[in-house]
Image 1: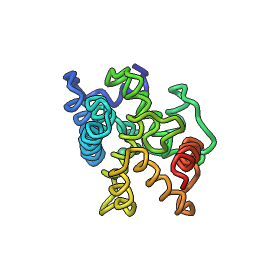
Image 2: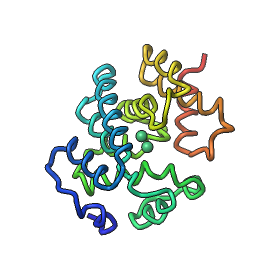
Image 3: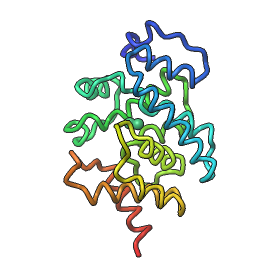
Image 4: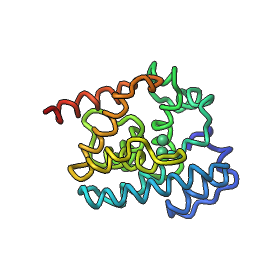
Length: 206
Ligand SMILES: [Fe+2]
Ligand SMILES: [Fe+2]
């Protein structure tokens, strides 16, 4: 495990049960709100997985771990990403919040011993999606948007719920289309998001 994580492990004892361990890890490190959010996203991802033919256990684990990098504030995320040897894009330098998805991917492997490529992929693109995304990538992406980490109801919830009746691709597109229809609110357009948008737009063109 990278020594960068040591200070966060001081009061953490791992049981091997991911649900217990991720929750305890976030709680001990002062992130109860994120722990609750991850719990809800894990359960929602599991539920969506059963409907759309994805391994429910993998989807649940991806949901539980997707935001564990909340332990690092935005101001430290680029330094942390560099120390972990991650590729840092210009858009991530400008708006470091977005790189939390990649940091969570590394933490899932190094702290929680999850090495399944599909789970890590879903975690590492849960904010932006990407082109050629797998079904589990989309399940986590959509679950995170339904169970969002802010107060009140997400403004796009009706579009997502309606599109879910069609497919998980349609729901992913509904959310991304909402973002691009309100592009002025985006701090940056992450290239992963842009390529996912292009691909889905082509798929759903009339
Ligand atoms: Fe996130
Ligand atoms: Fe999240």
